[in-house]
Length: 147
Image (cartoon, rainbow, N blue to C red):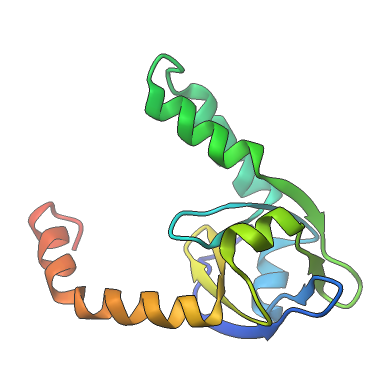
């Protein structure tokens, strides 16, 4: 993967559980992707190389801590490798559709090294809630030197 993944795009999930990836994300991510359960009821979508980095970080953590074991199990057990077809679509496994509550309209968001897939209504609600907290979040990030 090259470059920073940014932006927000809405696409439609078809009756066969396939969805077209936004062209800009497709070119950045490549043909082999890993879909994983994300936090806040979305899906994380990684290029194969970005996923390998995530998996290596998880493997380097102590399995003696219950939080590490739990998060590793959650992320890795629900992950699936998929290929982008000739039309730029991916097939989303049923268990991941259920996890993210995906219906017909899906929003893809660029989040630095991966993208997220959200049910459009859930994204709208989440974004509205987060936008109301933006100033407070920016202040907190400023305090720790992140902004």
